[in-house]
Length: 209
Image 1: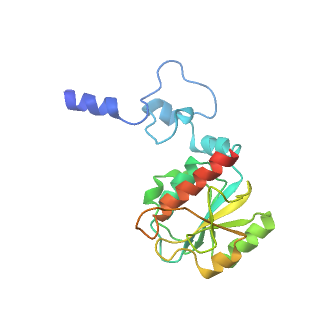
Image 2: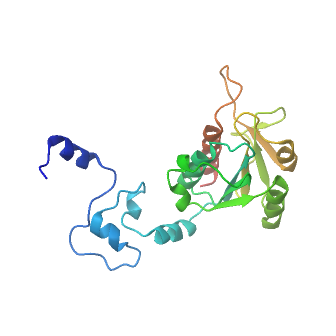
Image 3: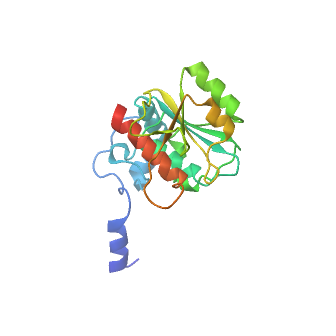
């Protein structure tokens, strides 16, 4: 096939790396297929050519001690984005409360690297958190909530988010040991749930990591 300037440009701008050049590493963390054909996955350079299992094992050795939970009563489309952000900030787990099915498109395959668990109801999440000794921090713009940048967010905790629109359920709010909010200054009543999750996770990282 004759290479055109357009094809050359696409190859130069492609995400990732091509086939391994030079002597192949013998380290068991490396994937032989990726070494042969290249690695175009959305991973940081540290993990280029590594197997999925090797990447997850390395992440597991470094994960932060906070968990992320989100209610999913109406098939919230934000969950995928929240999983992706949880992976970026190296959360211990993501806990989906309510409906088991969720839209994975927004996760951009990061759910392969991020541990995602399911709880049928808020009571199940509460029981799990109590057994693990984890306080629940509810995130919602409600009267009495403490601005997130001023709140005493514990290092080990569960950050609990509600759905787009209705926010957290009464059961979730009642289960929380702390309520925090994101201060806003414009006309909108609330911000996107995925955006809110990113802000709060980053605040945890800024403070504890």
